[in-house]
Length: 134
Image (cartoon, rainbow, N blue to C red; front, side, top):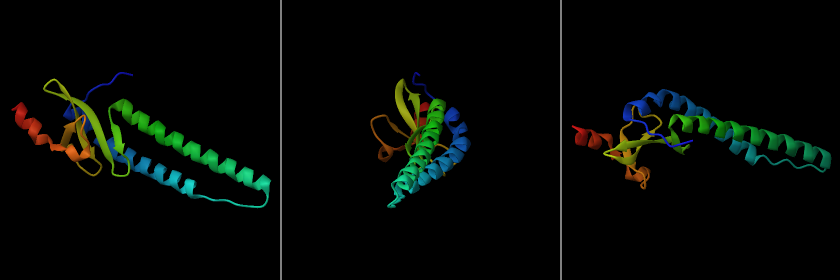
């Protein structure tokens, strides 16, 4: 799969879908963390193995669902940078250079962008791009 780029409009059309997906992903992540915290101990080796199998099966199924959804979002151009914070980046091109449009769950539209080599802390207002376009 080759990298592709979204313009601001294309990225913003994904926001409603992303908001729902982030909530599902957070639920899956919480369930995975809960399963990781389960400790089952018994003197019955058979029951111990049986319960470990069930727990591991659930753990791997939830991880599969989590990464399947992350991959589907990635194929649409959305890169989950921080699931807990709901931070998503989108590759874009501005003045012949690669940038990342940056959105955080809860924002109604994309308000920020940053250079590829800087992270969330390097976010700059989208207005800076619009001013340069005008």
